[in-house]
Amino acid sequence: MEHSDRLAGIPGTPFLAADIGGTHARVALMRASGGAASGVETLGFRTFACAQFSTLSELLRAFVDTDVQVPVKHCVLACAGQIMGNEVVNDNLAWPIPLTELRQALGLDEISVLNDFEALAYALDGSLTDDGRHLCGPDTHSSGPTLVIGPGTGLGAAVHVPGPAGDFVLATEAGQMDFAPNSVREREVLAHLAPNGGYVAFEHVVSGPGLLTLYVTLCALHGVAPKLATPEAVTRAAVACSDAQATEAVEIFCAALGSFAGNLAMAFMATGGVYLAGGFLSSIFELLQRSAFEERFLHGRSARALLSLVPVRVTEHGLHGVQGAAQWYLRRVASGASRCAEAGGQGA
Image (cartoon, rainbow, N blue to C red):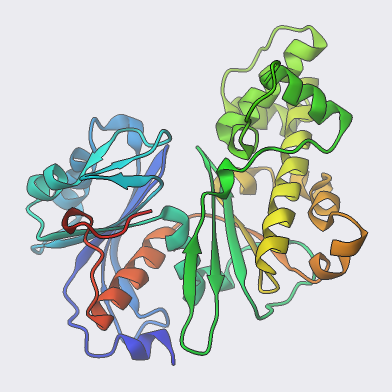
């Protein structure tokens, strides 16, 4: 059954949908719409820098005050983290999110919460499927489980699984899996990051902050002082070929991302494809094309036959997160279910 058919009859009352990352927050005013292919209509949309606000309620209030002209009583939040009691907590968020205070500050009746990459995976029912630049594998749309992976402030991943009773999405904490070095240089990097051994998450290497960590580590291994202080500066230097350590850092980053994506593609048999999400990857797309990503994605002899059939695309984040969150929320409304975090519902 089409998603828009499942939502038929839901009142078109506007609601807020917010995709909250560690660096940016994307906020939209949405409503159900049988005329839209995805079943949702975007009435307003803005992107905010989280660091410019002291709380999430202040950020959302800025959107409501400028872009919302009707009373809004419901909000769905897509964000990284875990619901601990009445709060969404994650090290990569700009601030804790106390849900009762947020609801009261905005005069809302309900706040529902899901994982940010879970929301992106729900967007595979609509906008995300037709977006993205082909990176490797067959340039086709295949059937089967589909992965959405994104290195940003952290490293997120979710899987969209089709089924005869309807599609469903699995959120993951795959970015917290142990980083496994593949090359001699990566072993040297790991030894520098954990000189006494121990746990190093993939996220500490394959993310925006991870890219900066790689750059600083390579400078130390080469015995030179780091000249660059942000992931964006490392990316720009690598694109311009103006800093040898920045270039090497991006090469290691891309290769490690290939291993990570291939691992998950094998784990979930992701024959439907892999979407690599985020503006960060789009900014280095040409470097990603020339990197060892594809070779590392394909892994060894036994896995290569399967993984060579998996299409991989790079897509901007854009509206996809808020649209996926809205689709998830409307599905819950359609089924009579609720995942209101304040009432003890499940979070991500």
